Image (cartoon, rainbow, N blue to C red; front, side, top):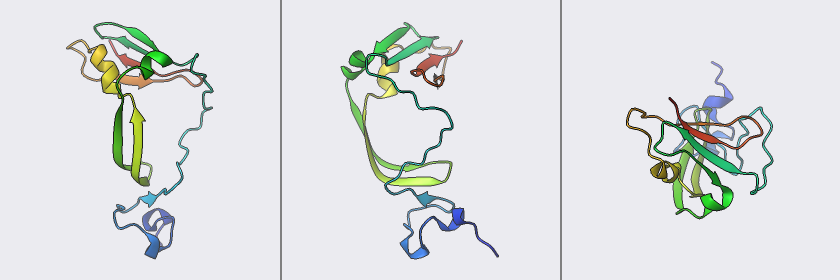
Length: 128
């Protein structure tokens, strides 16, 4: 029986982390590129985050305004549905929950969405 590389990992069997689920591989120091579109090249002066839709108040946040908000952190493991895992990652920044806390979704709206057109900043929208 032939076993595909996705089920044995990208590294020799003896080097496989026992925390990996079947079908996952340890990305180690790399970050797999999962986008076929062009990466936006934005300066802090051009960056914005727009919160709009069914929210109490719509707002556009500038880079400086966003960076003035309270920061939070994440430390843990990431297991991507595309098959890779990274152990012990650390991220820091402003949580989306912080932005939505300023612009509470109207009660009839339960699920915010995040969108981005290639080459433009992200938009967080609570759809109508």
